[in-house]
Amino acid sequence: MNLITMRKLWLLFAQSTTVALGVLFIIALFKPDLLRWQPQVQSLTIQQAQQASAGMLTPSESFAPSAKKVIPTVVNIFTQQKVRDPAHPALEDPVFRYFFGDRLDPKPRQASNLGSGVIVSANGYILTNHHVVVAADEIQVALADGRTLPARVVGADPETDLAVLKIEANDLPAITFAQAESLNVGDWVLAVGNPFGVGQTVTAGIVSALGRTHLGINTFENFIQTDAAINPGNSGGALVDAAGNLVGVNSAIYSRTGGSQGIGFAIPVSIARLVMEQIIKTGSVTRGWVGIEVQDLTPELADSFGLKSAEGALIAGVLKGGPAEVGGVRPGDILLSVDNKAVVDSSSLLNLIAELNPGTSAKLKVSRKQKQLELKIQVDRRPIQLTPDPQLP
Image (tube, rainbow, N blue to C red; front, side):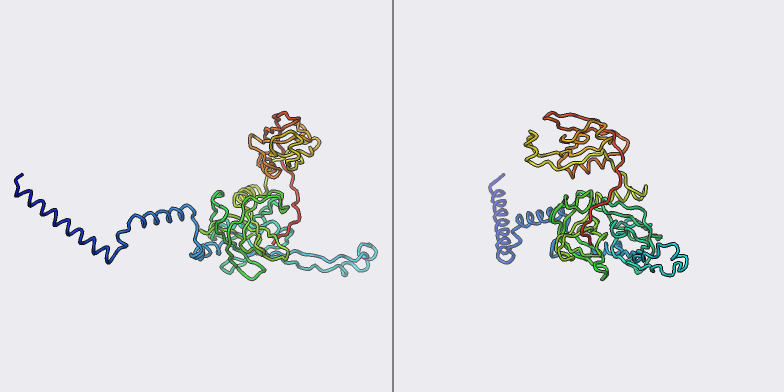
């Protein structure tokens, strides 16, 4: 390469550098934001990742699309029950009735009840609370499109306060079920129902807590707690996530006034779906039972039994002749696990036993006099029991 060629290349390089510096100077003077590529890319990536992982709306966005999706799937339930006034004692006298017949019989009165429900299938199955339809002689369901149709009870489960109704209709809008594990404390939720009979209503709040137990509302408890307003008439209505998917069935409130005070409880979709599918398939819910009475193991009790922790449940009583007694369980035993699933407290034990299939055998690990024993129990079918009287909306 000769000297002339090298000089030409150097001049070309110098001119290109000068032009490039001039362009950068103009951009820096008039459009400085164009030079800040790296911070913008990082910020945008982080924001998208957070929204994608949460899958929820921000407070500045509207819940209207979700509400529009859910409202057609939530129905109003009207029930009527025939109630007779107390009869006069003379009516029990056969001579008195011979002369006066039934003319003095009290006339029946109609007692009305109001609640909500959720359409779970296009062919007319509706999920609601048991306490909404219990003892009802007549049930009417009002759809969002204005139709009112009679309904029958397919089956009910008082121990979870759930019931399934059926109306004769097709091509109904059905709600979408969320994944059971998708809900987190702090997520936005909407409560949809018919409070006080004023009409379809949507309220918003967040998930305040998960896995609430020991409330004395149902036998089997694993409630979602929310501050979305739930009032009388909301029972059986839908609790949905911000995308409009069912996460729970509104069931109860904690209130000193009878109205919403920001503490509402919903049955999670995991329980509701299992109960619903059993009822639709067989008309009832079948649970395991072994015939024991248990109580929570306090730190004081654990210390007295020589245990290192208070995990497990104390067996306070064993039904004579029941599966547990036949299998060797004794009062005073500490139940540690059921089929290798750890027992945390009495509530978790109740759920573990209920999940067992009647007619099968189960392994119970107990601690007795600081020694661990493994007992084989033949599981029986749990008798239906009434739930405590809760304060229900």
